[in-house]
Image 1 (cartoon, helix red, strand yellow):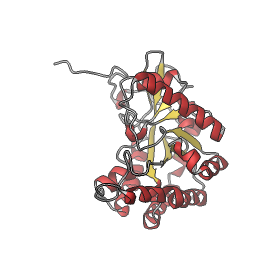
Image 2: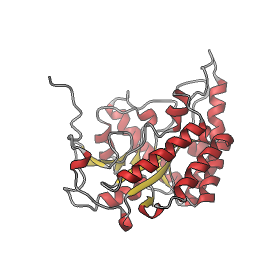
Image 3: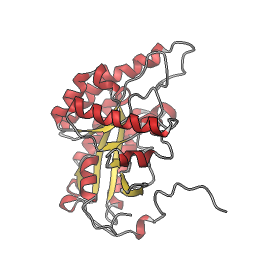
Image 4: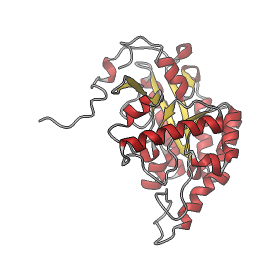
Length: 297
């Protein structure tokens, strides 16, 4: 039985791949991905903590806006306190709405990942020409507003079209983060060459765990710790990537922030901390693209 296939990568079991190290002989690459999003008022899609209101759902909009007004600043302060780097998956609508956020991120030396214009819309339903224009606009806006030549991309809601990897490659993006198929980076074929897929967690992600599955902050804290501990053990056999996906209105709430603080302190105080590379996705790409062709599938 022949099923439709994407033909972007071939099947290759993780235990049958060549071994390599991260910089400094480290085995587990750990990064924090903070989603910073801006929504349309009274239109389009939104995150929602509760049952959507009929008609104008100002409650959902303002809860999301808490993330930009308060939550992001609490999380950035926590990262500063702990001395942790991060990447930020940003809607370009944030640049005009809250330029102070962009300034704070660039001051930290953090990496901006393209994340569409706004999470009020999905990307996957666009015509190819419109999607290409969107990606070009996003890349230009990030450069103009932050001074960064953006290299990574994750579409809003992980919504992609059949041609998204091709268009990202052709627009000059080097890696994408919305194909959660692996615990290692893998190369995806494009019609013009290739683009790297860097693991981004669909499960170790506060949005589905807390908003959809209704786990508590303490549940999520335990997930982070267990994921880190188990991947650290598994990384003895192969180099792995452990990412944590956060959203500003969720983990930026003070009582959830306390749980996140405990989880990150656990990681930083771990007795095998010397085997962990605290990094950003762009640095992962830089390391992988220097490896020989047969090492990374």
